[in-house]
Image 1 (spheres, helix red, strand yellow):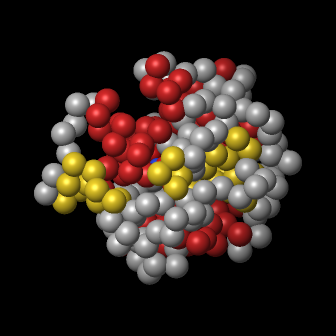
Image 2 (image 1 turned 90 degrees about the vertical axis):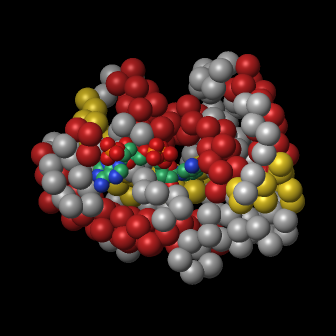
Image 3 (image 1 turned 120 degrees about the horizontal axis):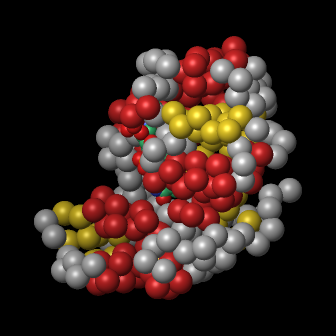
Length: 261
Ligand SMILES: NC(=O)c1ccc[n+]([C@@H]2O[C@H](COP(=O)([O-])OP(=O)(O)OC[C@H]3O[C@@H](n4cnc5c(N)ncnc54)[C@H](OP(=O)(O)O)[C@@H]3O)[C@@H](O)[C@H]2O)c1
């Protein structure tokens, strides 16, 4: 199957491309590094020619909210338009568990992701939206985003993070299936408080920043309630636990318990 991966050079994209190639698919790696710009449209028609599926794992800056909104709006519209013209039969996008809830705070990163999802849902194109929880690889970014003068301030929210390899495997599984025309959720096997895992991650990296719980701390521009980052009861649970990921140096073998309906 011919599959174009937009953002195929990123954290998830590289893992996804490797997985799809290993599964025998004909993969087009599309990003600015390969001459494809989903925001301007440069190289998109060529990248999507003959593709049965388009997988969007591109990203914008997590901290520049205006840029994120502009990127996801323009890029998603282009992908839907060029995808329709190329006859792409499945538009797959990776997004974040809870995006709809988290987008209520105007202007944050999640508002941009919610716009991306809305455009896809309302396009009339066959699609699947994959919601994943936070990546283990992303925990250091959560610390950085909450840092002010050497103190990391985090809300008491719970989360259920997962390995990027498991996310890539989940996206690959969804993309080679039929469009489900809805959101499918994936999550890690364990719940933590944000501050608990950030503290562990910083300690493992000999990072001396202090971590404090602050009920008013924002999460990428969004107010966070305690359970908003958690998946629903129908989420597919990935098997890689945090300690296994650490022990494997951040690249464990991939295994998922079941696949989405
Ligand atoms: N972080 C988390 O915990 C988390 C959890 C769930 C879901 N997600 C979602 O996962 C997705 C992927 O995240 P990631 O961390 O893998 O992203 P990433 O490592 O930042 O990679 C972003 C990719 O997008 C490409 N890109 C950026 N601008 C582009 C453009 N104008 N045209 C074409 N390609 C462009 C980049 O390549 P070039 O620079 O070469 O263009 C790169 O390949 C995001 O949409 C994010 O919302 C993240």
